[in-house]
Amino acid sequence: MLVTSVKIDHINGNINMLKDKFISHAVLILASQVVGITKIYNITYSDEIMVTIKALKSLDVQIKYEDGICTVEGVGIGGFTCSKSTLYLNDPSIYMMVGSLSTCPFISFFDGDCHLNINEIIKPLSLMGARFVLNNNRLPMALIGCMDMLPIEYIVDKDEIKTMLLFAALNVCGTSTIVDNTVDYDKITPILKHFNVSIECFTPKRHVSICGQQELYSKDIYIPSDFFCTLAVIAVALMVENSEIVILNVLLNDEIKSFYQILIKMGGNIFFINKRQNVLGAEIADLLVKSSILVGIDYLISEELSLDECLVIIVISSYAHGITMLNGLLRRFIDKRLKNLINGLIKCGIRTEIEGDNLIIHGCSGNILGGILIDACNDFKVAVMGLVLGMISDSFIEIKNIRKTSDFIAIVDFFNKHGAKITFA
Image 1 (tube, one colour):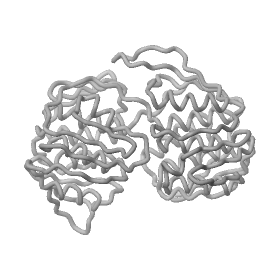
Image 2 (tube, rainbow, N blue to C red; image 1 turned 180 degrees about the vertical axis):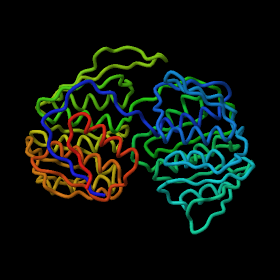
Image 3 (tube, one colour; image 1 turned 60 degrees about the horizontal axis):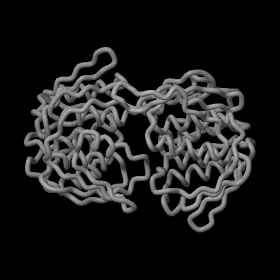
């Protein structure tokens, strides 16, 4: 699939951001395994979420959706009953469900429209005691669960596998340790902590240890906006002239506050307004973002910063006036996604240098050439950064090798609704 993004005049208005689908799926599946009733606020009732709800209902979980609130009556850890039908699931819920059902003493059948590497699923769960039956390493597949699964220590480099193993470990006697080599914003451990899962995170090696077979109890939760998409929208509003947006109901967590401080250093006109508490007492605000004269900075990449923030900072630095030095970036992240983005910027006329572990970006003062083809390599976040580049470049940006997922269609529709001119070839 080929997508074209072109320069826009402005982006304006009040914006309700896309809700985080990954967290929505994870919360539904976790809430199904606690004792008691959990209320989930701000969840998007999309087709994919409905598929996950249908699968959970087939496992005898009671779920209701009314007035924007999803109510889940949990069955407890290990309390799922055998489904009488095949569980048809999508990414990322299939990973979560396979992990959760691997410790249940019955056979579960899975199918779905998923882009997954079956071997990445089978290998660690087989080491723990689960068994699988399938043809040619493709769906459909049968999972033969084991109620006496063994704890595991395992290295992961994908969020989906990390989440799958953490969900499996919830019903495993003993402590499992996941060595987390993922580079994205960590979404799953805060959710587990919210439900009082016995979990510890160690830095800088990013070991995650979880003690299983602990009784968990219900706790209402609020689904935040998609963090990466929020960053992308903020970047567009800062760089496109004559723009002014208000992003509504932003959860004021440490990640958004940290990113806000970086943007302030770069000269961003960005303000938290109308601070208040949501229905669960968490601090939220509206985020006012105006087009800005942005400048380069000298910044040390901290252990807390994820690749999500770094990708957006790199694009903003390319557009800004002056030089940005991102110290320690290449020590933290040696990632194909990062290389693809930098290569795209170089094609756009942006001068970059590497000194040791540091990335130096020579900003072009708003004169990004464009007129290039970016290979997204089926990576959602590279594709989104390509869309952003197209909106601020003098000429078009074409992006190839994009996986046409519902997430990507949603962000394209979202940008087009707010003034972008993104087209599919």
